[in-house]
Image (cartoon, rainbow, N blue to C red; front, side):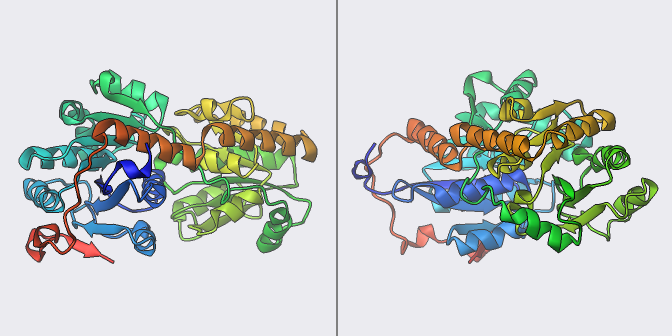
Length: 409
């Protein structure tokens, strides 16, 4: 399809649950920032207000509306609000994003019929017990609402199978893995020395990292218990943790570190804006989660040329292939042994393994491949309309204050 085939870009409204820090939110921003603007005009509608993604979208000049819904509390008035907004924006396609965004998009289009709706799901159902009761209800009830979606995009193969087992229509399933910016996440050998200098640890120290927000599903406790085992066997290993609420103010985390006598070996960085630089300075990257879909922490580390050890969750094993190690969940001993196995390989062998991991990302999981897959999906649904876009000066295009949406930027 050439750019001359379309007289104006198709308008796509992305209805997302929120724009707070998380893998699904990062994936959304990556997609709307890279999508071909000659073919598609992205507009983002966030059910909640705020989040770090708001500023990123504003910097990218992406049209954004924040509806201000309370967390995980959809309502009839909120659905009407969204329906009115979609009616005024007149999209060619509505792309739901995450559970609440998916369901809200479909319900809003039932209230105000119009453009087709597709869904995007970025979770598995492996650990439903850790979700809020309202979210569990949305997930299970989503199987009925999903019949109104043209296609359901899953970022992981396991996620697709698990949702289909809950009654989500298999005939509408499409798997599009997450993709990674291999220019941003890339090997940087100099970062090994620089990061150790920043942490105030010896240049010869080995550094094992976990990048994850503080949440029960990320299972920081298993990582720290594995760290304690490793620390007893090798005095040269240090441990780096980064992510939202992973800092000295986290009393629960601090107490566990003291209990395990790791105060001198664990470095809590908190939420960082320079994760590519952090990853590039590691010797081994870890994932200790009890549930994931397509873990970005592993994909980003692989793209950075860092060998990984991950728990057997989501598509982690498929992602890594033979470039990393997979261990059972909630097993500190297995995690420790796998990490020690990589540390004892020697620098050159670890480097070769890391470069093999990066090559696997370049072959299968690039950001460009993900965007192209979404664009192909949209082409299959929308075809090649020659219809001209409504003028932006048209009063119908503009959202009024009375709809309760706050336009950002």
